[in-house]
Image 1: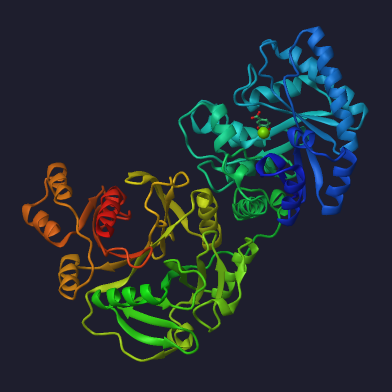
Image 2 (image 1 turned 180 degrees about the horizontal axis):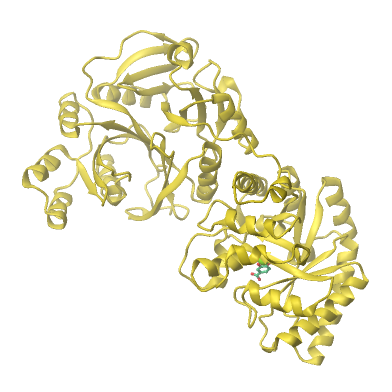
Length: 617
Ligand SMILES: O=C(O)c1ccc(O)c(O)c1
Ligand SMILES: [Mg+2]
């Protein structure tokens, strides 16, 4: 199916938006009226420019407050519409979106609305144009798709049809106020579905107009079931473009080329979920592009790479030694050290361009080449081999936060990327008890958080979960983890909710590597004896634990002695402690999970952040 994007999704002038949409591979655009009005180019020039870029102009929008009005207003509205039809002819676009009226002049009379829309469609039809009527969720009288369909049905004109917008429909389904279900959408005659607008959104308990105008997201970034919705529209027989219409304050400020790629990735992923959904009819499926290769199963994290400079390199190396890691290898041609304990492997790269904390994560894939092909099909930029820590046949792509994501073969061991290292030591037989990497925590710029979620979800096939916000010492922090179904690859994303205030300590958000153990107290004692820079946690924290959770006094004493933090939920318990921040922005966490605890100890994060701040002062 054709893929389209509304210009309102993107930042910049109309010209910036068109260029970005074309570069990301869209087939068409919805031109938002305000973008056209502000453009110095004539409609004819815009039409030419779109043709040069290979973009169809799928829709002109919005035309507001037309229907169910008195005769004088109707005359004025028809005149206004004819002038807009002129613009549409000059643009070479055939469909105009008319959204349900919010005007106080509108009356509650479906027959009048239908009759007036019939008149409008008659005028449009004479000029080869057509009208797509859309129910805004906050329309004055028409605020459901069923109501708009009833009016279109009564209006009964071949040039009059429906525009379905997933936001207006799903914002009502999901809040339980709409009586609609996908089967009823699938029953609309396909030829009456003139246009389909797609937007996702997070669940928010707020006024629907504000929700729509500020918080829409691209499909797969929010909480709506767009697959079920779109499947129903396809089952009805709709074969027009899949068009994104996302009003979002952050996207409107983001670089348009990057936002357009994010948008395209969301459509490719949505089409994939449709193509692989048994309920979608084979006729509808045939209209979809062939999906990317499926995400191979992931077996774990093969390694995490930290970029270090001279000074932080020594500091991190000393800390790793004190945590019980052994420096077991040197890269054959690059200034990269391999450290290992149990199955936890950390590379220290002193030659990386970016002196950030976590510069790369490597996932063990059942089929690394397929993982890489999938990543490319989902518009992930492929990294040249030379930028990576390993030279073996490793493919890597760049995540939106700049982290390199490597794909390694499960269990390839020495024949794989390890072959790039000259082994100079052996993994010690009595390490501090760390077994593997539990998770990697990556700081996200606040304006790329949703893009990053979609990236990890679509490219790696990870599921987003554990959404939360914490009131942290330096401002609100947003948390979301992405994990594979078996919990072997866990990436914890976190980031400030707003751009950081200028007062906040002048360090970037730290990132960290969390290491798993089966006995955190033995671990913490052994590490402290070896001089590990473990973080001190204030007594107040343990007094509060005691008050809240009534823990066994011996356990509480051990937590306090070892500076271990504690959390529990209905599934199990988490014990965790941390090193101080090493260099600019990296630290290690030691975690022990009990029972089915699958979270990240987020309630303790503000205490940990304050402790890090205290340790730096
Ligand atoms: O917020 C609005 O006004 C608006 C305009 C046009 C649309 O298609 C829409 O879904 C919302
Ligand atoms: Mg809309």
